[in-house]
Image (tube, rainbow, N blue to C red; front, side, top):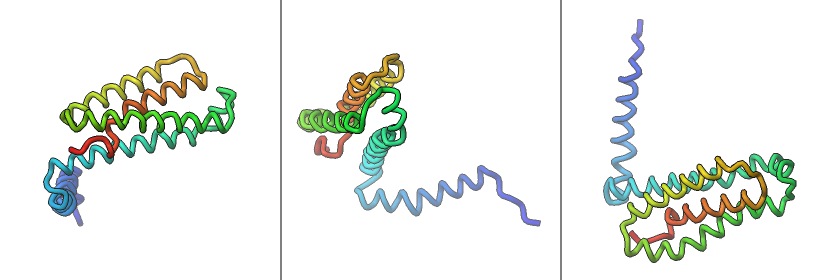
Length: 151
C-alpha cells in the first residue's frame, strides 16, 4: 500500500523544484535575484492593469443599463485611464531618473490603493465620476509603467 505524502512534503518539493529549475535560471539570465524581483513586480502591475481594463468589458451591459451610457462613453472609461496614465508617465520618467525607483513605486501603490478605496466608497454612479476615478487610478499607475525611468 502506497503512502500519500503530506501536504508539507509536497509543497517543499514543489518549492525546491521551482527555485532550482525556474527561479535560479531566470535570475541568472537577468543578472541576479534583485532585477528578477523588479521584473516580476512590474509584470504583476501590468497584469493588474490589464485585468482592470478587461473588467469594463465584463460589465459593459450593466454599465450601459445603470448609467444610461452608450458604447462611446464606455470606450472613454478605458481611454481616459490609459490616456491619463500615458500623460503622467512623462513627468514620472524624469522623476524616476532622479529618485529611487522603490520609493516611487511605494508612493504609487499607496496612491493607487487610496484611489481604489475612494472609488469603492463613492455612492454616486455617474459616467463622469466613473471616468474620474479611472483617470485617478491611471495617474497612480503611471510610475509603474515600463517606460518610466531607466533604473
